[in-house]
Length: 231
Image (cartoon, rainbow, N blue to C red; front, side, top):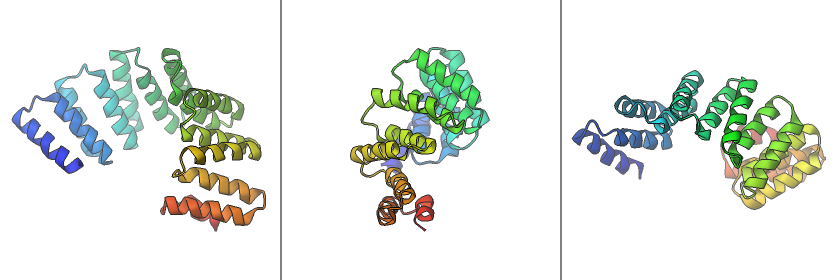
């Protein structure tokens, strides 16, 4: 219950305005509520009290990134890395912000560093794959998605991402295999149905395409892309 949590944490900081952890926890609650401006305010208050806590710089960076303030996010991750150069998460998250800025080479460098620090970091492999995908380097993208799937085979998103790379490369049959596996792992993910629908449409199987896209819309009623693909 977010409202109850906010009430308790507000009371905690009223009783002790130097309670840095409570401010960070407030930031977490606001982030979960997608109120990123309030999250940023509270993470900043926590850091004013404990500026050497590198985890909180990462929290602030995530909030800035979620609020589409990518330069501020990168600066926050810089602080975190200065405080702890061995934290793979900070490098991964900074890479995400660089990727969103289309600074793909900087993003790949950060993902490389994250993977060097944590060789079993599936999310960093997936993020690097996304970056290669954005560069239309499908073979490197697929290799990274392969590794992410090897590390976390039950994570449906990795299968969807590899499916997209196969599809963009023109391997629709391989893409369909990945989308099928994604729906097996997570039947509530609308993206797998949307993407599978686009493959059926390209194959001329229009009834199957409409069926898949309708399922995607039922799962995500505001899924504009699926409406467009079904139209």
